[in-house]
Length: 310
Image 1 (cartoon, rainbow, N blue to C red):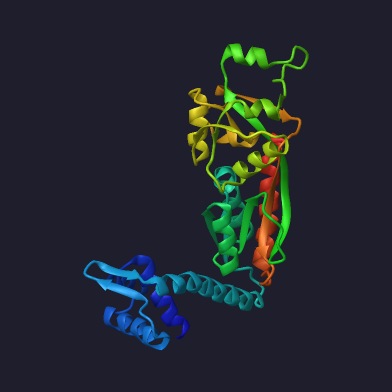
Image 2: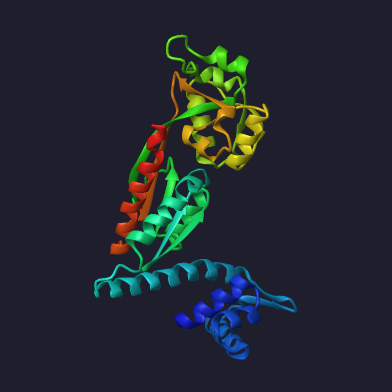
């Protein structure tokens, strides 16, 4: 099996068709089919199920597809390192972002990347923690930004930001006045035990915020009163705005809302819920100069984007 055969197989598996893959790769379909078949013979396994509508990976094919993507990505990294000898920071950097942060930093991060690394290619992917950690492990991702990640000797970890989760509720005049302090005009803090008694709209497990909220409530002998289980911050905020329940999220998530004035934000105490945003890299693979520069850009962009919410 050579790299060209692996690239051919990955394209066919991703596109689900020899015809579409041959067009994308600029290779005749018979030649493409022959190369993929030679790889199947060498591996002694069928990798694709051919149908009248296309080609579907077998179980063995799915396994090879997962590893093949990582292998091809690392080949690109090797080419980048060789190109760096000539003095230019180039190559591809693949970064995974959590959905709650992606909307806030995608544009400024892309702009900074194009300005500081004009010869490099940026790939941004949204995903949940488990999928992004797997992407780091197999080599599909170079960098991942995660919430409350477990420390592991396989991963290099940099803390980007630490913030309290807050209670986000629908803003009505009566409620807003009841929540406010006379002196400061800010909403009064609420005890975590009282938060647990409210109908909450929470993301489903294994969302990092959901796990963190439940863990903190367990420490005081409580569990959340689950009104709705919804994945997607915009959907959660829309439901909160309609009075369907309350949310427990970082305050900066209101930047995703069309009109933040529709919501009230209250600090949570006794205890507070601290969320940590971290940047992860695989410790098994050396960082290229382009990746190191990308880490610096992420740190600066995150710090600037979240500063208004500190």
